[in-house]
Length: 508
Image 1: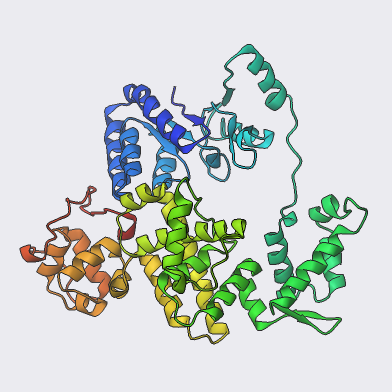
Image 2 (image 1 turned 45 degrees about the vertical axis):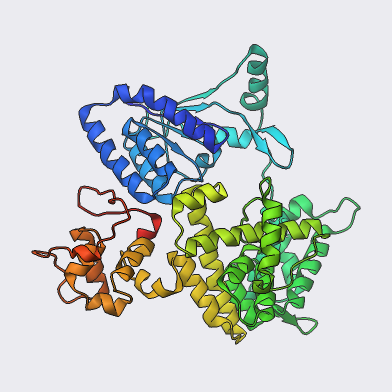
């Protein structure tokens, strides 16, 4: 009837499994035009990354179904969302992350799983009322559908009664202030001072007294003023790390504090980075990746079964590279956090070492979207580290800058210049380098036949790359690829209708 369906499940694996099963149903409802359009979109999806996730998603999309979760690359998610809005994709199975912030209206929403795993609880926990209502809110958007349907699936009459009590008749949970989280309080207090909005303890308390946080948490369980205690301890932390200074009455941000606030860093991340940079005279890329991975602003990879022993050995083998002292194994929680950061740093090192995406996803148990998320966060934090090192006039600025560019492009040191050319990326940079074109200047003056050979005969790609490098005549009309420059060990790239080849995230 021209509608579409969103199915919410509780894990990435279940989202992929449900999409594969649903694709067998949706394929029979596609007309020839839709099949042709979906085949084009599937080819684009395969070109985003050379991973199993890309292939599985493309296979589903060709049949009119898709999955959507945080392990998908952002390009994957955008292609799926656009095709779903156009009603080309008939059904999407997703994790609850899709319920918030993404404009994906549908005719019908099915909440298949109303429990999900909670590490804190050590088992399956019910979703909140807010989350379930948010999922149901995707159905029947004004201007998109004349009506909407939302289904909760019950496995028994007892469960039916429970779902009515828990989600249909229940009121949503109360909204809670995010200022209750220490990182938020640190960040906002520094920003309030740095912006000049408040310049004294009294002004800060007066301002915060008008917030939801004060309404909910001002009175401590022992009857003390919780707001004053939190503000005083946070100000003391900012003062101890030289982010603010005061003369007993007026509080103002230091130059360093202004820099931290401008970078939108958690002040604790900034303090960790500064301490690490000051402790490192000649840091390696791994050491810098590890430094930013152990900040509160980086979501670290979990240690899986067997990881502790592996990364403990690695920690001792490469101890000299760390920016700061390795904690004792007897400090179990701190040591495990250090190892989790090391695992994250090792993944970033693999990415910057040009390891294939599919190998990284297999080695670390992540999806292409997880890789891109870690890469983007590391690039941001290393950029912040570069600014902080410059502010403090540290000798580590060049090393930090190189590490940032390596993780940005996913290449070794020798490819940084070449990979920075628009349209080149990590894989094409390696092919050009192996063909003797080692820098942007080399590419600007290169023989067009060599460039075309290195880029495996992709004329449109070669023209775009040469134009971006500033070549005087980027046209490939009448140019034959140099056979000696063509990579022999790699399979041909997937192509789209315009002839543009794309094989990995790093090609963008």
